[in-house]
Length: 149
Image (cartoon, rainbow, N blue to C red; front, top):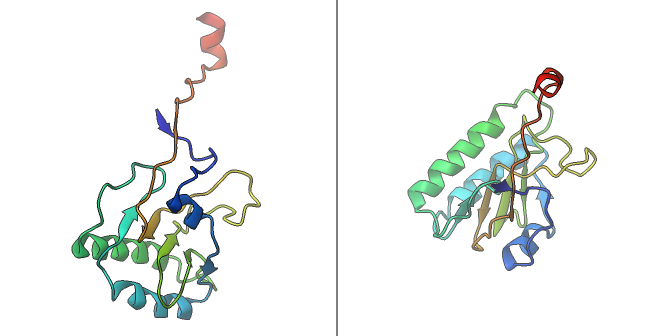
C-alpha cells in the first residue's frame, strides 16, 4: 500500500488549510527575509512529508530547525535561477502553514502539468492527516514476459 497522492484531500482542518490561500515567495530577497521569520518561532510546528505518514507530535525545536535547514538547503540549490518559486506560505509575517517544494521535482505546481505535485515539506501549526492509501500498481510485464510466460 502507498499514499494516494492523487486522491481527493480528506475533509479535515489540516487539508482545508492546506487548500487555502497561499503566497509564493518568488524573489530570492523574499525567501531570504522569510526564513528567519520562520526560524524565530521553532515551537509548535508539525513537520510533514505529505507522501508519507503524518507525524503524531509536534517537532522539537531541534527537529524543526534541522528540517528547516534541509528545506532551505534544497531550495538554495537553484540560486542560479532568476526566482525562487518553491516556497509558499499562508502569512509572510506570522506563518501557520508553509509548503516547501523540491525545486527539481516541482513540475507544474500551479496545476498545468496534470498530476498533483505535493511539497516535500509542510510546516504546519495544525496537526496533519495522512492521505488515503491505495494498492500499489501491479508490476507491468514486458512484452517478452507476456509472450512466454
